[in-house]
Image (cartoon, rainbow, N blue to C red; front, side):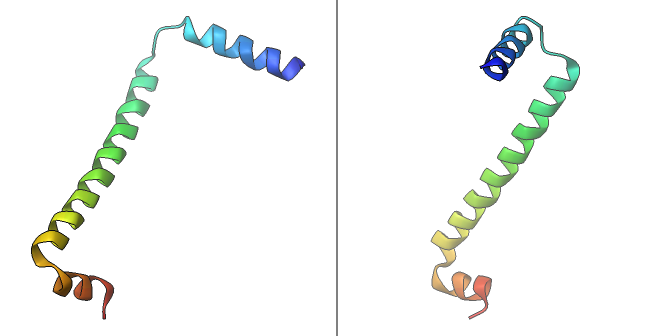
Length: 62
């Protein structure tokens, strides 16, 4: 019970503080990683659509 109350107090105290530059930097890094992953996945899907089975064979070495 004490742990729950302590965590709730931490969350309540944290939400009243404005975001620091470090918080913004970390969120920008996370967005960059997510965009890179989404771009890579999109590129693979587009290559699969245009090149078809030969691309899959080359990609997985069959």
